[in-house]
Length: 477
Image (cartoon, rainbow, N blue to C red; front, side, top):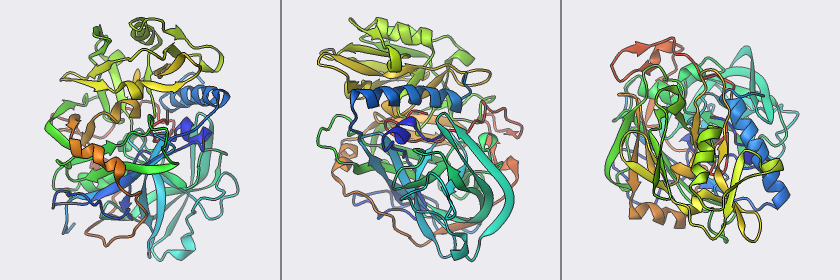
């Protein structure tokens, strides 16, 4: 998906979530013998009321832009990338390694977009204090001499397309097409994040390249055709540091030590394979069920690169009508709602299977005054084929999330008691590890969109590929 506004504003944290071959040190806890994991890092922002207002306003605008708003041999078949949580759930990032010999970079892991891009060593704006890619240090670099330009709600990244070896979660993709950017809007990148790794489908890639994850899954390199996220929570921890352990991202397996029970898979509609889309069937607020209109109005993008939850204005008003004392936000908080801080808000979402709860700590984005708190849902306005709902980290921190290549679906599972122990782990650091499985990139778009019916869709409509790349716990794109 895109970079979060939150990430931009505060330090503005950008981060949720994957990394590749050049991952952080292996997780201390037991993991399935078939693979490794990538640790994530999470962060929590400390803002004034004015800063929260600016962030909230830009977050809403950025997400609307992102989704179309108004303004072959294998020795291993799975891998893990550990994530960093930056600024108390503001963003989550992991690591990739690029080039020969490889250099490590921190990137936002974003299921709401499909491009990989990094700050270039010749970057002139917006890249201060972040690691940049120097193509002269790589023996396998190719310059494609093709312009690249991706736009976000609060800025853009401009550069060109190149190709090189990219390592991620114990896998390597040779000659992978990605972008290096020499002009980046101020605030789009924040130290130590150098770019973004999109985990959506090829049809929404601005570069036209088949995404790294799809190169691997589509050519049978994984033990299981899945990739999964576990995100930590520090939003309610007053002692949270700027960087905390953020969880993990895995490819080729679901880490069964991090969840209990079955994974509740729900199919992605066959005509919506671009973002990871699920129909939202109902929402329960304070025990009252709100039914969602079926069809396109129910389509929700499951987006690790977005901090909050975007909802149609009418449904948003209905949600907050169930919370006594809730009121629409004003000025910079227009499109949001406030509610009494002494109210514990219980919300559950269902996507056709069981209902999944959102912790009241995640629903409470921040406290604005002595008795008024800001909710983590905001009004989302999209046009055309854009999804009506964006389901970000406010929800995803509460479940173990699995993205399945085939049958194309998204699954949720209940977090295990061991998952909460990850908060006490050391913060992962970038580490280049030996490649266990490698493949050469293909430019064939057919590497891509297998529907649950088993047919191959090539000309998949996009929901408006306005690149927005943000990943975070409070990143809202």
